[in-house]
Length: 289
Image (tube, rainbow, N blue to C red; front, top):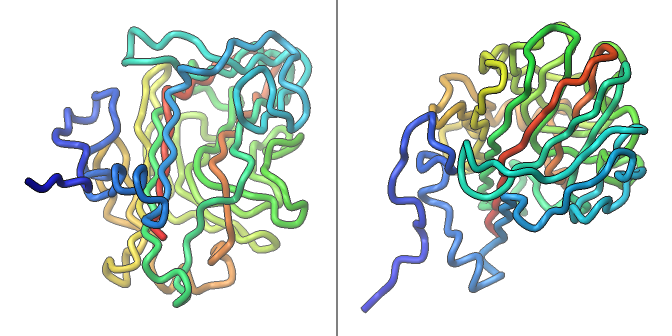
């Protein structure tokens, strides 16, 4: 008897499902990665083992409050786990008490484990990413966010440090990134963006998703080096592949973080002295070797 270790998602319950999207993950060899580390690696966190931090306990770029991540929170900002029983299984990670102008809360992995590249050395390194995220308000100047992959190559660190998002505008700082961003002027709209450190930002898809207050969205992307040249990175919103993606030409350009290692990152910054709770139900990423 043979066992298929490549597929562990057998049904997609649609955009409202609380679970990872079959459209994205069906061909990810998760089980193979778990039993054979030469295949690749897979990371998933539903925050069931994260503690609830107290205000001000996050610290500067520390593994704060039992979260197991590099985290940064301005004074009084709370980053910690809470029950997500009403939306799905497990827990959720919330950033709250961000009630002072330009309050930041940032969570990121401490290793630049993931990369996208068109070079021969990384030709077969397919990559998957998805996160389920929401925020309490879509008002402009309420809260800005980034979710995806990022790394500060110049400093050699994750982006869990002050000013990952620029004060007042919510623009992304001077580091490499690939993922979803919404700034202060567009509180109800995600863009899909990328940048190589030292270059200008590229908005690959403007308005890729309309944000609804206090409503989860599943945001994901897949880098497939064997996909068509015009769409090497496919972007997904609630399991739906977007018509526009990132091409091989885009990846080859100086503005793309080609071959730059990046870690998983979630950054938030409020624009006024009013709390806007941001919640991450789960996030996951995987990459083949």
